Length: 136
Length: 136
Image 1 (cartoon, rainbow over the protein chains, first blue to last red):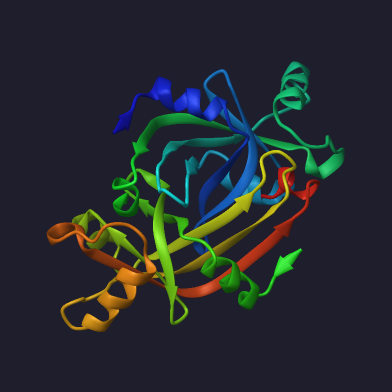
Image 2 (image 1 turned 90 degrees about the vertical axis):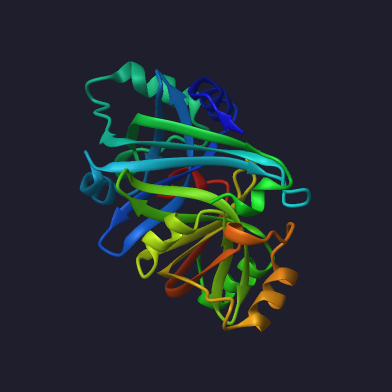
């Protein structure tokens, strides 16, 4: 069952861990991050500014799912869009909003790089016990 | 805390849902699939042979994690490697092993495409409540 973009964002808003999907010299990769949804964008914090800067402007993806390993039902949402660093110096109100929205300790210095993914396409599926094993 | 490849495969062997990470014309993407580990490879079933054939031989990734959204502890494993279709006609014993290993109904016809990811690199991290929000 395909989900509407509205349903996708509703599911995204109810969770805090997703996977940032990107490509570097070694190929595609995905890593779990804490995230928040704000103004239609996905935002997350990064510890590696250099890694993020290399991806700035690149097409990336963000995946969130919730799948019951016992009965294999669940849902998945995939956002495809462009990544950009948020300039926190220029937007202090964003800091306050993100501090509230994204769980975890607030750290100073190089760890405080925030990334925004602006969606180009949002797709999602709700899966039943039959569909999940043949999803891709 | 970095995990050894052995620890990564031990964690992979204990789970059945991971994310296939690939790149197509629209950029990088990730989708959840049921998987099994066999002979050092990750295998999963696909419903879309054409999609899989386009990726055959490509560098892809496979991600599995288990993160507690409440206390933000957990682990994640990332396999990077090449994808290939398994020729089941030639290896009937693989069918039997996969049928046992990968949960879900066995379906006939176009849905029975199996993909093997042969690892080039295997990395993983165990996360505590502090680290998970700055993982990437």
